[in-house]
Image 1 (tube, helix red, strand yellow):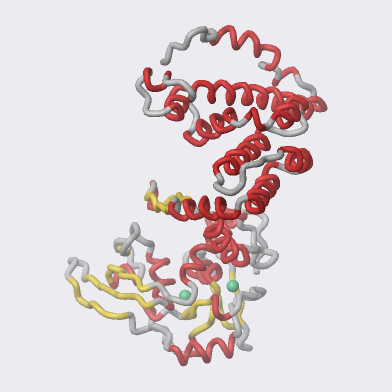
Image 2 (image 1 turned 90 degrees about the horizontal axis):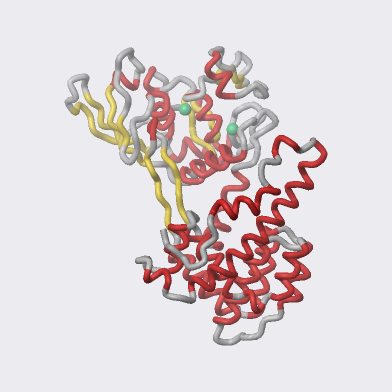
Length: 398
Ligand SMILES: [Zn+2]
Ligand SMILES: [Zn+2]
């Protein structure tokens, strides 16, 4: 721990904060909102104090003498905050002189620390710009008092663009360099996604995902995060069928008792149900193994729907055939009503178009899609309790 001169003892600090602590049990129902506002103002004032002292600290070589590579690193490590918080507080502290009215507004509670941090970002950008050096805090401050922090972020970006378009373009160029995406395997064969996108890249992705992530009919009870994840998969499959290398045995495809799971390139093993769905309409490179793990067949999936069949299906079905679904044909897969693994044929009578979600429901989700005697399609919900739990209590059968 760095031993600073005149460092206040932590128990002294706790004594000063005592009026703000341990109030949780003593607050009546009607008092909590006002108390939260008061607490946040107190935290913001502490943040302001922290930022000023952090900037002073960064202006010395104290971090160097304590063996850290930078003041940010020292603050990050010793104050137990992220690198982003350390950088932000030093930046705010370094620009307080150019923001006297904003500091007053923070004291009065008309803006929050988030607003101040954004204003400090604009000051820094203007100062570093080769073309624009003057900064007037008042016009932006008036907007800060009226806007949420999220909205004010856009306001500041616009202000920066107006005052320094080249600087903003350069910063966004650096943002492109910061782009990254990680697919991290975690427990149970799941993958966690982690990454950074620049504003333009994020805009492109969100523009593509948002229409796909809308609720798919009244019965769609998926929460927004789940719909966005489904939309990402749907987007990746769209227009270009995945060419998956699947290593499986006939026993697995037939879901025989004791058969092992299928192995798939770039992922953890799939269930038979998933392989079955992919085999419905993907360019599936099969590597079939006998039970003794001897390769018995390597080749293209010959059950893929031909381009002329797909055109005919698109004309006939127009889009997803699931009752009530309006996903257009370009966002669908061809589904075998009787799967080819079980002797179903790849001809129009046995094929229907289904969107990604409904195709998933039929294979992995336990639903059945059957043709009635008059040619209509009917979806039949699974009877098993497990699927009831997956769908949640507000599900209404389609
Ligand atoms: Zn299918
Ligand atoms: Zn559908």
